[in-house]
Image (cartoon, rainbow, N blue to C red):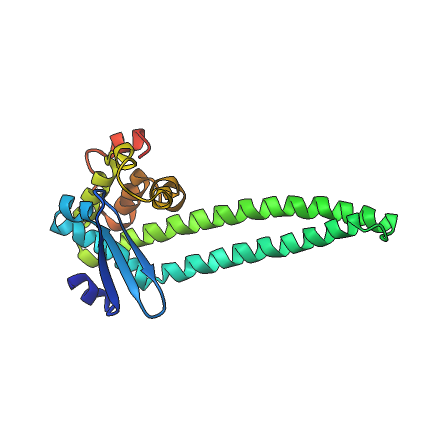
Amino acid sequence: DNIRIAFGIRNVELKVIPWDIINAMVISSKDKNTVYITEGAIRKLDYHELESVFAHEFTHIKNNDSYHMTLINVVAWTGTLILVIIISGLLSTLSDRRSKNSDKIVAALLLVFFTFLSFLNKKIMDEIQEKFSKYREMLADIGSVLTTKYPDGLVRTLIKIAYMDKENYKNINIPENVKTLLFSFEDNTHPKIWERLLYLNKLAGAPLPNQFEDIKMKNL
């Protein structure tokens, strides 16, 4: 409640997920925000660490991160759809016996160009989505520290997350699609723990922990 009051956000629902891992996430819509936190986080984090986690998630809500990520996804899919329509039209021209040879040559050249453009579009949009997502995570970390005024809470949380035995956690009873979300996509949506610690040190004055070099060396 202290964090919710600090952010001035009222329409928030809290749900606990019965998983023995340290994780939290937020799903936002125009009228409702739901913060999900795992039992593992509640059990393994102390008061200040939990406070930092909630402040991180509430920063996502305040910054409308769900909306911005959805907007980027819509732009990416719209571009892909337009290219698919163009390529389909060109294929139709090539397969139409009534088309002139000159038209087919032009269509073939355009087909090569737009096929290349579709691959390039995917690569560029994937890169933009990844960088934007990681940037929003960094901002949420800064927002957490500025709200709690206690950077050690988030630093200790990140250290615990860094040393989680993820191989063990992959064997717990979690739906396969959720496992993919938590473990496979994590590197594409979140900076490395050592990057987050360094970012907090430079921009928020959070001290680098003794474990920093080990975490960086292992690229956690």
